[in-house]
Image (cartoon, rainbow, N blue to C red; front, side, top):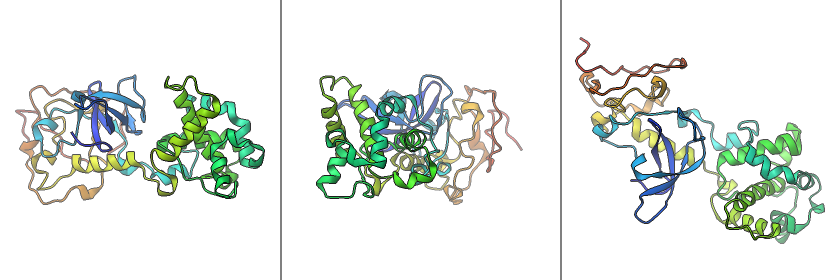
Length: 326
């Protein structure tokens, strides 16, 4: 299997969806902690997009590059392609993009007063109650106009949800977003979310609130990326995975010619995973044959429950075994 941080497919129910590998749970790599792509549209309940779970190795595959046999056994679930998802900077600059969730509200609502004071009059907030403020003071920086770059291991979606809550309940005026995006008040909101998650993991039950905030700030400063060099690692890992999964070329061979699921069955809701992909994935340097699209004997047909939008680039339909078109 591929290494930490790369894209893969994880099985949920009958279908496979994109994940990013976070870390193996043991040295033998029998299971992995993964983050599911935020654009997954799961057919089976019990899993949320952008969630972190553990998967057994038998439920994970990579792009299966040049492996026609294995690809024909994999039925793909539905997801938003990387090319159709806004980039991280677009998401983070528009707080209306992703609505906040109950866990965000639980983490931030008890501290609305503190966050509002940090936004308007940060001098009134005690340094011990806001490690980001203490960090700025130590560096003799302006509390209102200095960017705080640290975001820790929070995902783009986490930060977008925090921004959405902040926009609606702390600031309340979209015209004033320039006063808080990337500055002290939203940085403390990130600290509060990290602290809330630390408090729920069972290892910090005896920590005082100030100790928990300091631990959260340490995570925020030293784990993950920072805002000034922001990279949407989830989007980038999916983009690379999709390039390997869907490239049509001489190098990709027959495995690159619409082979996913041909021995297993229709993809979720008869979704066409090739529809809407970048045209440059087809190198047009291989002669394909319709005989390569024959379905296996155990191919499972599904009925589409909800009409899908018309695909931009219709592809050849698989040919049931024994029914070749002339």
